[in-house]
Image 1 (cartoon, helix red, strand yellow):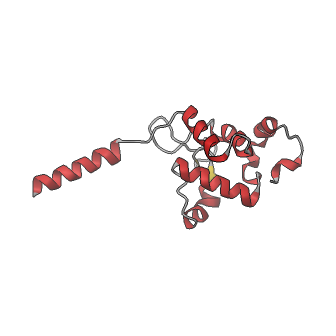
Image 2 (tube, one colour; image 1 turned 30 degrees about the vertical axis):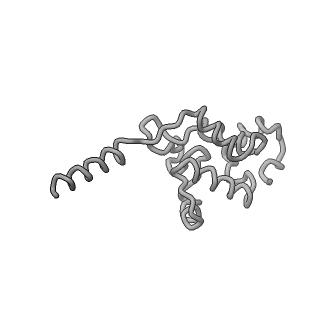
Image 3 (spheres, one colour; image 1 turned 180 degrees about the horizontal axis):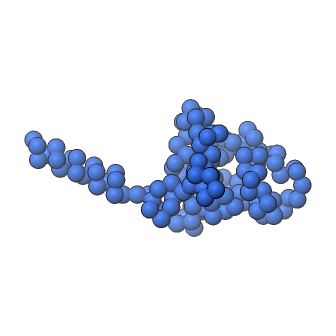
Length: 135
């Protein structure tokens, strides 16, 4: 019984600690486009926020350089949105959850949550006025 328990524990440790998710930016971009559609404004926001990174080179969630509370491909800010995302059932540490919560945010607040990177995405969207901060 001890051997079986040790084996199960060892297997769990190996699969959960040493196995880290890894997606290339190209794969993340492909999934974002598949999820949102190629013409969705958030498709232009993602490269400005994270260069299409959901995970760093170690397999941990990609965090903002300026603010480490910003996580994932859409740099969802945990301080401002972490509780709401969890309450709604979104795990922003996963690509699926990050995309889903970003879509939810966009549907409720437009592009306002991503204003800090607007100098980048406004060019990509071809928008040069304050209109970009709304839906």
